[in-house]
Image (cartoon, rainbow, N blue to C red; front, side, top):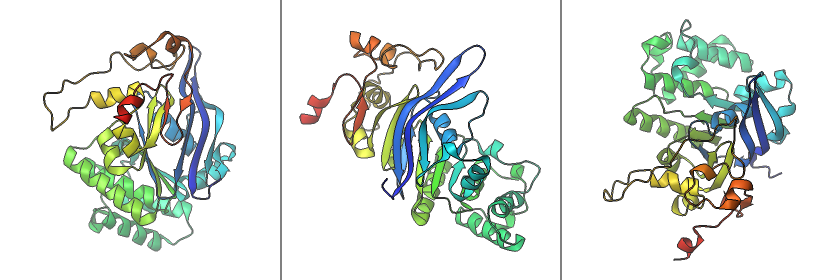
Length: 326
């Protein structure tokens, strides 16, 4: 294995099993993230993005969730085979996660400073004074003044809480940062500030990052590579430049066609018809075929294979290659 590969996910399948049904949330995905690299994981709600993140963190709620197949290598070790104690050590020291909603990620009855200091004390053998100083230093880096150390979460705005969560995720210098929709609950100006902080800290600490989002613009500003998820599969993946300039999968095309263009108000937006496939009742053949305007008979009965080397896509047809040649 390439020693620069921090995260290597192979053929991952995750199901949620209840008495009534089995929801196939993740269906055979593969991707790698190297040191200092950022991968954007893009897709609609229900595509399997957060389940993928929780699998990497080994935080899938069991029951009903279970990893039924695949391997997740962090720094060369398959974390699925870890003991609970090994996974606890990995979270924080090795892999950290910025959760989607900062409002629920903080304990309302503990001061922000105490919560962050507790993270350091749980993972490293340092004194309380050293832990407090590290927290204060990192809060300053993310733009939270040191005199807020003894304040409670309800005394912070949404943007400030998210900065605190970012600081919490970086306290133990992780090798991999997973950011799950880190700007969803924030207004546009605060979003830009938070993304800027994440980018600066990623470069400063040479972290690998997986950014989970439904916003293609955020990926363009933040990531090196992008993977487009649909119904638990990665349907297209490559560098941001490759995928954005020449999207090859009909779903990726649909995502771009549904985005307004600032420089061209005459272009009619083309929405993707229908809703994402139900994970408990996936269609036969290509999972996207019920919504695809290019659907042929083969799409309804056979799963497509992955085409391409660096720029990969999962479709029976290379529909857009002629456009690339023009």
